[in-house]
Length: 222
Image (tube, rainbow, N blue to C red):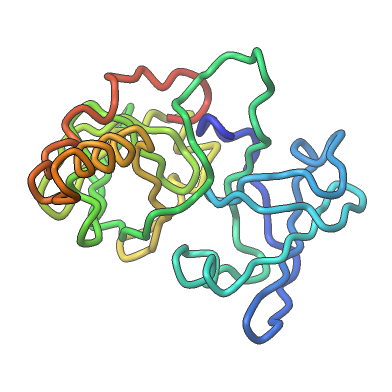
């Protein structure tokens, strides 16, 4: 379980194509400090398992399902990535509940630049818009964010200078893909209400309206 508060801007140091999978080597001195074989580390919002460790770097295997559902398949040597270790029991929940299970990918559709913030517009794949609500929570490339505007096929987020400097969202360009994880609470609510209506989830398409609390995503990454 993660919170979407990015700890480190890491780097892909090697990519090995295994046919129906890939093996990534990533540099992250902060997230590998105290890490062990089998631990989880979120890479651009995707929960991966550490299979090897060496001098501030770790190796993770990524199966076809993950490559197809996320943007990790587009990573290459030198790519920068957001890294986060799982939250410890009893620690502060700085962002929101993040599983590291990507629901789909969006695309950076535009950026509105100001002196002290940026508004970023991101496209939404079909089927995810019902889980995204104004002032609700969403995870973009592993960063816990508050939705500013929620449209039928897009949403916007507002980024402070710290987030722009310390995460990949500061270097993403128009047309670049981003991993999206919607609020897990919205999906469970829809499923439960759908079961009460004979499985007709269309009857509760608005269930996502109760998805996210108005979250002040304090910390370094918003």
